Amino acid sequence: MLMLPELIIVFTAFLVLILDLIFLKKKNTWLVMIAIAGVVAAGISAFVLFEQTGELLGGRFAVDSVGLWFKLIFLVATGLTLMMSVEAFDVRAKGLLTHQAEFLAVLLFSLSGMLFLVSSRDLISLYVSLELATIPLFALTAWSRTEVSGEGAFKYLAMGALGSAFFLYGLGLLFGLTGHMSLVEIASALQTGPALFLAAGLITAGVGFKLTLVPFHMWAPDAYQGAPTPVTAFLSVASKAAGVAVAFVIFYRLFGEHLSSWSGVVAVLATVTMTVGNLVAVLQSNLKRFMAYSAISQAGYIILGFLGNDAQNATAMVFYMLVYVVTNLAAFSVIVMHVHQTGREEIDSMKGLSITNPLLALAMMVALFGLAGIPPLAGFVGKFFLFSVAAKAGYYWLVGVAAVNSTVSLYYYLRIVRQMYIEPPVAGTAPLRVSGLPAVGLVIATVGSMILGVVPVFYERIGADTIQWLASLARVP
Image 1 (cartoon, rainbow, N blue to C red):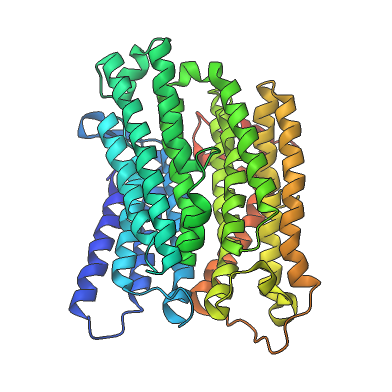
Image 2: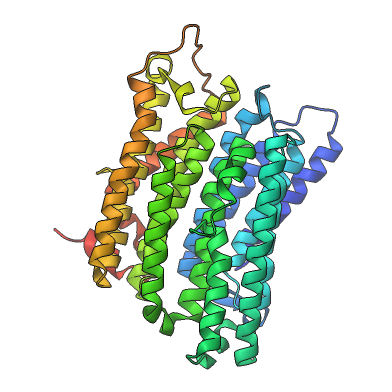
C-alpha cells in the first residue's frame, strides 16, 4: 500500500506500451488519456496515504508527509505536461512528437524514478532512483531527432554523466567514512572533517547539475532549446523538483546537523545562480532559451530553503516548488500552443497575442508575473517565505540581492508582455486554436497559480513536523 503510487505509474507505462502493440493500426491518441488516468490514480493514492507513515524493504523505502508532497508535485507536473503534449501529437508543425506510446512510457518511467527517489533511505536505492529519473530525460530531449535536438541532448548527456559521477563519488566517500548504506545510520555516524567536506562538495556538484545551479548550468539552454517543447516544460519543472528532492534527502536527512555551518556556501551559490540567470535572460531572443535562464534564476531562489536545517525552511521550499511547477507550466502551456501552431520560437513572434487570443495572453501574463513574484500571485507568497528563511538565518544582504534580482526578472518578463499587449500582430496572423486537454491543463495551472497565492493554509497537511510556520501565518487574524 505504501508503494501504491509508484506501482500505479509503472503499471500504466507498461499498459500504454502493450495497448499500443495490440491496437497498432488504429488511432492511438487515446493513449494520452490512459497515461493521464494513471497519473490521477497515483495522485489519489498519494492523498490516501497522507495520514500514513511506514517503511518497506528493510527500511530502504519509507513514506512520510514531506515525501508525499514531493510526490504530488511530480504527479502534478507530469499530468500537466501530458495535457500540453496532446498539442504536439495532434498538430503537424515544427517539433511534432512521434512514437506516442514510447514517448508516454519513457515519460512515466522517469516519473516513477522521481517517486522512488523521495522515499529512498539508503545510498543504493537513492542513486538508482535518481538515475531512473534522469536517464529517460536524455532520450526525451533528443526525441525530435533534429540537429538542434541532438546537440542539446548530447550536451545534456555529457554534463549529466559528469554530474552523476560527482554524486556517486560523494556517496562512495560517505560509505567509506561510516561503513553504512542506510541514511539514518550514516547521519548518526558522520563526524566533521576534511573528508566529509569533500563528500559534501562532490554531492553538491552532482545535485547542482540537476538543479541548474551556476556554474553547473551549462547544459540547460541548449537542452531546453533542442528538446520538444513539452519535454522542455517537463525538464524545467519535474527535473528541477527531482533535484530539490534529492537535495532535501541528502542535506536534511543526512547532513542535517552540519547544514547550518555550510550556509555561507549556499548563500554564495544562490547569489551567483539567481544573478547570472536573470542577467543572461535579458539577452535572450528564443523563447525556450529564455525560459531556461528563467529556470536557472528560479533555482537560486529555491536553494534559500537550505540556509539551515529548520523544519520551517523545508516547508517554504516545498511550498515554492509547487508554486513554481504550476506557474511555469501555465506559461509553457501557452508556449507549446504557440510553437507547435506557428513553428516559431522567437520572443517577437508573440506580437499581438492579446488581439488574436486575449485569454491566452492573459494567462501568459499571469504566469510571467507569478514567476516575477508580483502580489497577490503565488510566486510572491512563495518568494516571501523563502526570503523570510534567509532573513531568519541572518542573511539580510542576501534578501536584498534576491529582491534586486526579482526586479530584474520583472523587466525581462515584461518583454514578453510588451510583445503581446503593445506590439501589433503581423498581418495575416491567425488565432491559435485552443481546445481539449491543453486548454484544461492551462486553466488548471493558471487558476492554481492564483489560488496558491491567497490560500497558503492549503499546505497545513504537509505534516506536523514541517507546517508549524505556515500554519501559524495562516491563522493570523
